[in-house]
Image (cartoon, rainbow, N blue to C red):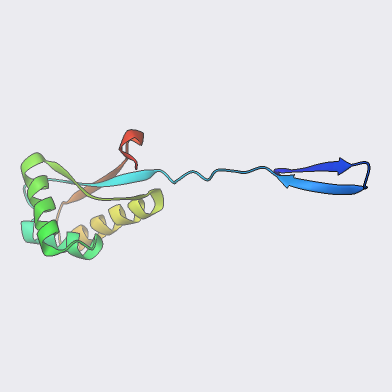
Length: 113
């Protein structure tokens, strides 16, 4: 892989050097909730608390943002976790006969860190 052998002909010793590899942080994705005219606000708050582990105050703020702006960020996660959160939102919504929709989008590089 990143190993190189270097030999010293005077001593007969073979040295192996390893090249450094920088690990890249995984790309993050925003999980978005979309407003609709049918999903009850208290359901969205409870969903934010259970699926996204938000306290009541944070959940209420996010729900109001979604209600007033049409869309809002529920959380930011790695790709696999974001996919799971979107699926959980859809599952809970269907179980409660709500048309709530969630989606995910990559976080901009300049927003990272």
